[in-house]
Amino acid sequence: MNISHIEHIGIAVNNLDESIKYYEGVLGLKCYSIEEVADQKVKTAFFMVGQTKIELLESTSPDGPIGKYIERKGQGIHHIAFAVPNSSEALKQAEERGVQLVDKVSRKGAEGLNIGFLHPKSTQGVLTELCSKE
Amino acid sequence: MNISHIEHIGIAVNNLDESIKYYEGVLGLKCYSIEEVADQKVKTAFFMVGQTKIELLESTSPDGPIGKYIERKGQGIHHIAFAVPNSSEALKQAEERGVQLVDKVSRKGAEGLNIGFLHPKSTQGVLTELCSKE
Image 1 (cartoon, each protein chain N blue to C red):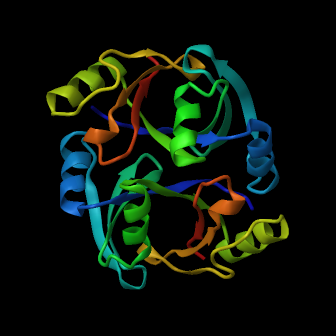
Image 2: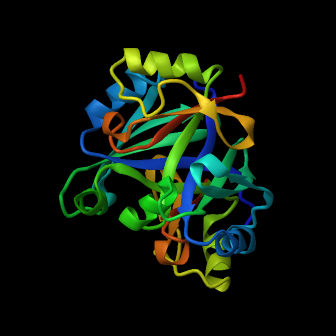
């Protein structure tokens, strides 16, 4: 699988502007990009922290995955994303090793990365993303 | 505050051995240390992923913070820890900026680091740790 680093941490928030204020004003981080991912029904804000990004996620619709998550669990850390050389191959490997997949093949995510999720049932409750540039 | 990187991600698990098997056998990471932190009533296992550690946390008692967390929310990502030059100063800065603190001054955590937590009420649901070597 060859995970090189944690690509990002996804955090579900109610209000992107309010959270950007906290991450910039209190923690002193700098938002470098805001992007809407229409098919995931989210607006995202990115911060670089060393080699890992913080990805804040605000739902653009109550029936999107983040909207549903917040309704069930409240705001908080939503997922962890590991950088791999090839996400489709890594997903296949995970499945061969007994992991239930959310995505059988990788798809386009924020920042043009190829991404896929492992199901939290197979990962002790941690929604886990594998992502790659290729 | 001068956050340099994400020091670690804390993940609450039911069974450390079972989770180590997953992180090693499926994700291909390597557990380099197992440590008990008696005053936090946890047993921890560490994995290095780039410049960030994964810290798995198994409660050694149902009335410890991780035991209570899992009873309420289930297994999953528990907290995010940012590396700062001086955690006591960073805690003071956070308080001056309106953040409610769990720890007014830093205390010793796993791996001998000086650590302190911000309250999730002030951080949009994200239990946030600040830690430093000094």
